[in-house]
Length: 394
Image 1 (cartoon, rainbow, N blue to C red):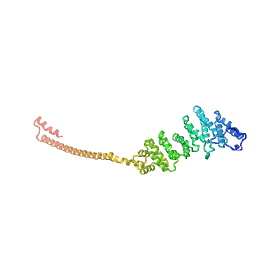
Image 2 (image 1 turned 30 degrees about the vertical axis):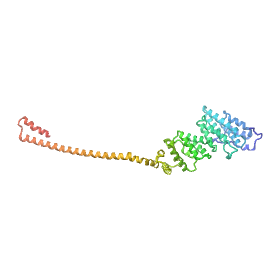
Image 3 (image 1 turned 135 degrees about the vertical axis):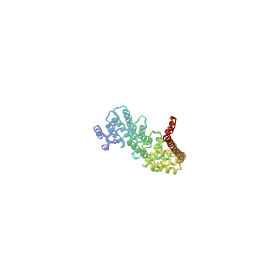
Image 4 (image 1 turned 180 degrees about the vertical axis):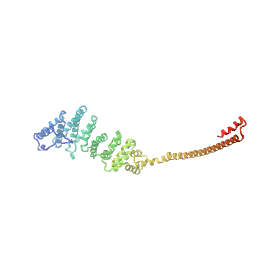
């Protein structure tokens, strides 16, 4: 686009668009600002060269991007002229960051390029939203397999800032499940919340599909942020949706049941007992068999949720546990009574045997003593005969 011959009056008051929380606006960025105020649109080509120059200071490139975005927002530059530039800068900075010791600096560069794209406006559309071609490029960058880790994260953060375009739905939802950082999740959830052209049910279905494919568990998925992203106007309907999903055989494994239990609990911030009451009410209103939400109850925990499982198990407990245990107790009692009776009988028999032996011993001692004292010995044989009963009696 050819630069105008004169400098518009309003350029004197234009300031670069900012997206960083810390600008670092010292040194060369201030020189760029002064040059822009002096030369206005005549400095556009130089600003573009500065942005594209990988050897330039990253704060200077950030300031130059901000002025280019400002000019586009005011209708002085065509977004289609800037979009390829910012995309090239993002890709080049990310590629260099993978092998460069100055990785942190280059991360700032592609972060800035992503947000420069997000701040290019559609001047012909309503609400001054992000330019549709810029959104398309950000979606491509966020889903590009070459962009991983911080590169993908920053592309998604910029995409979440584009104002709620439906094409951002799948990448943002995938990123919300993928990244564990709470600040990142909150930003992506707000981006999804702003996508009002897609119904909450479609969002919820998408999350269930993504969760089925993900390796995450209930404590790693960001249940609160997912509920914010879905943006259901009626939380009772959202709870019913999750309960309906729990009835699906694909979701009745321990992992998915745990995830759905966490989503239901975090939906209203209730405890497991209150969530258990919701399960009971849902089963009753939909005439579900008692075993339909068995896995969900197990993962939910709490007295109320588990009471339904006890209702299912009670007939089996009566038949296979309580009755056999009762029969075993009765049989054990009978055996112990017999053992005690036999032991008592044996003790009495031993007692009478001891009394009999004692009495017989006394009798033998008495007889032998009488013979020895009053009848005397008539030889050795007679003495032995007398002493033998005496010794036996003792």
